[in-house]
Structures are given as C-alpha cells and as structure tokens.
Amino acid sequence: MIRWLLLLFGGALLGGVVHLATIIILPRTATQDAFARLEKIAPINTVTALPAPKPTGATMPFMDPAFASAVCRYDLTEGPLKLTVPVSLAYTSISFYTRHDVAYYAINDRAAGRRVIELELMTPEQHNQMPEDEDITAADRLIVESPTINGLIAIRALAPEPGLMPMAQNAIANAKCVRQELSAASR
Amino acid sequence: MRLLTGTLFALIVAAIVGLGTTYLALTRGAAFGALTIGSWTAWPKTGTADADPYARAAIARTGQLPIALGDGVSFTAQSDDNGKLLDGRCDVVLTGITPTARFWTLTLYNPDGELVANSINRFGFSSQEIVRHADGSFEIVATPRAQPGNWLPTGGVERYALVLRLYDTAVGVSTKAGREVPMPQVTTRSCP
Image (cartoon, rainbow over all chains, first blue to last red; front, side):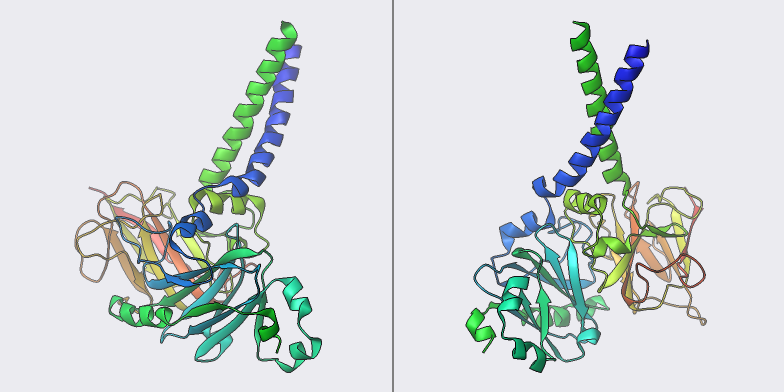
C-alpha cells in the first residue's frame, strides 16, 4: 500500500515537471500561432493588409472588427527597417511582436504626436553600430530595438463607425516598411 | 515485474497529471497578474515583454496577437455578475460606464474567438456608436431578438464571450480593482 502511495507521489512530482516543461516548450512548437498563420499570407519586410474578420473566417482569433489592420513580418538579418505609417483620423497604433507573438513595444498616434509616425526598427547590435553622435542629435528619431531577428509589426487604425472603415483602410494602405542599408541608416 | 509495473504506474500518473494540468491551465486562462473587476478579467502583463510562460503558452495555443499594453487593455467576460455563463439565447444587459480611455470597443465572440453571424452584421460597438443616457452611462442588450437602443445580436449561440478593449488608457499593470476602474455590470435579465 505504502509502495503504491509513494509511486503515486513520485508520479505526481514528475507530472509537475512534465507540466512546466510542456508550458515552456509549447510556444516553440506551436504550428498555428499568429506568426505561423501570417507567414502564409504576409511576405517578408512588406506591409500586408489583413482582411477584416468575418463570422466565416478570420486570419487570427479575437481580432477587433472595428479596426483596419495590416502586418509587416520582418527579418532584420540584412539590416534595419524603416516604418512609415500615416495617422488616420480616429486612432492608429503600431505594436511590435517577437517571433513568439510577445508584444514588446507599442506606440499610438498621440504618443508619436505627428501626422506620420516614423520608426526605425533594429536589433541591439545594429543600434550599437550606429555612430554615437547620431544617436544624440537625432532626438526626434524613434528607434525601436527588436529582441529577436524575426517578428511582426501590427499596424491598426480604428474605424469608430462602420462607415469610416474605408478611411481607416486607406490610412493603413499607405503604410510602408522598407529595409535600410545599415550605412544608409547611419549617414 | 514489480519494479516494471511500479515504474509504469508512476509514469502514467506523471503523464496524466502533467498534461492534464497543462491543458487546464491553457483552457482556463491561468496567467499571473490577472485584473478582475466584476465579471471582467484582463491580463495587462500579457501585452508586455514580461509576459509569463503561461501567458506565452496561451498566446501560442490560441494563435492570437495579444493587444500590447502601450496600445490598450482587453477585458473578457464569459459569465454575468452572478457567475452564470453568458448564453446567447438569453437577454443579457450591460449597464454602466467604462474606465477612462480614448476609445473603447465591445465585441462578441464565440468561445473560439470567431465573430458570430447575425442578420445585421453587427459584431460589437465602439465608444462612438453607442446611445447613452444623459449622465453618460449606457445600456447594451445582448440578445438574439431585435431591440431598440443598443442591440448586440448574439445569433442565438449557446456560449459566447464579451471582449471590452480600452485603447489609449491609463488602466494597466499597476491598476487595482476598485472604484477607480468602473466596468459595466453584466446581468442576465431573462431566459426563454
């Protein structure tokens, strides 16, 4: 009897280890996460408008139907990216996600405080390679450091009423994410 | 033989306990730092780089992009204030006001996070669309039958979830539940 209880206890302890291991490994093995879903439809380093979510199907679950959205799936191996997003009338936000869909930075039109949001996205190494004086003089340059080489930028504009959706989509359609040569970026 | 059955038994227990708890944690939404106000729950930390392993696993499993904290906060309600699960065949009333935010949207999803089909193609409300009382409070009725005022059609589905997203808001990781964050009350008025 005691033997079986001990085995049960040992099994439960081992179960705890299995639990923690699966939780930690799961994001690395998920085949249907947002990044994998977008990999199929979004080319690299280009802004792709996402279709509005419909009851018959959506790119991702829990998308907000009041927003026009676009993504830029980025790869920084060949240099930093420059992101330009015109602000729509109501509310525009740009969120940055790592390869495993963890949001590490977000900015909205009010925080950016201008008609066109301009951002530069680079890895910490690329940021370190920039000439130092550049960093100080360009105080109005928004530089975002990506913790991963790959990731997603989600650009979203609110249509406060369904009738304003075309306007929000237009603002998104003019967004650009362009790869920059490192030398050009630091000139 | 005794050793073999014993080991096998322990391993089976480990598999059941380990995978079972993982499944439960991911389907019940177990992440740290939950902010619960009435029937609404938000995980502000899930939208930051500090997201804990449970939040990361849940994000990967559902395949959604969580709303980043610099963008807003998303509150989910799966039951009314009495703990009754939201039923698309009942009349569910949302009354009250929302925390300060530049914009908010309220959206109705099925448990898988898909929009629910309905005759007028309304899937939710934004803060600008809503009809309010003189004091700024509002009342939204979620029901399959057409209603005057703010009607949120449920399409008659058995279970649904309401997601209230606050954009550009002060609500965040340091927010404590209480008087500073008034969330709408959710009550089931009548069931056929």
